[in-house]
Length: 199
Image 1: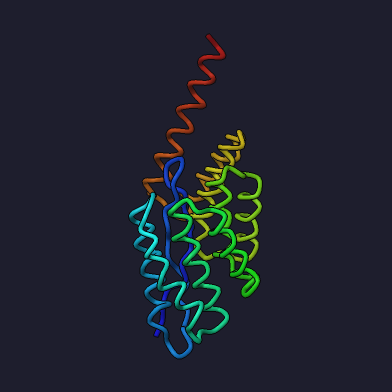
Image 2: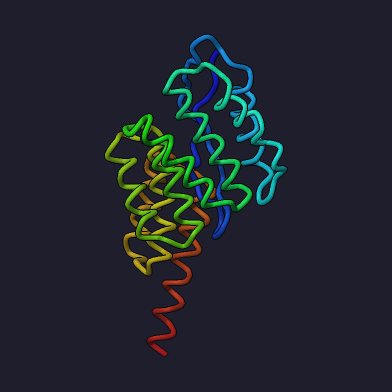
């Protein structure tokens, strides 16, 4: 059986995460609860903010009782972290991301997830560090991380680099409406700032 290794890879609008699911991983021996944990993380992504706490129960079961590989255990911690983050339980989400990292320290997606938890906790410097770490580790969905970084640079007041990040994301994924809209808003605000300074 296969289930998807979930990543919290995109920050939508200004406050809430949007979840993107990517890297396929094989569950050794197969595990229905681990699969259900992934499915629930995907559901939580679409229904946030605020989802039922019962969504994390299959994750709890898989981690407590299932015989899954270390890689899939890391993925399950990460998936549970996504559900916790969707419920704004950021400390618990961070704890799960830390456990996942101990098992799979070179998995780029976990850094994106933790970076988004930092972002939601308004710790933008740490968020940026994790996004950069995910890039260094060869994240497959680079355009999502560039978008995250653009949002983070905006929060840090570095509009020039934010613009560069949005444009880089659009080079990889031309016509991505979400990023086009975000870039447009940024450029409008910068134009308004210039006009107000000239008046």
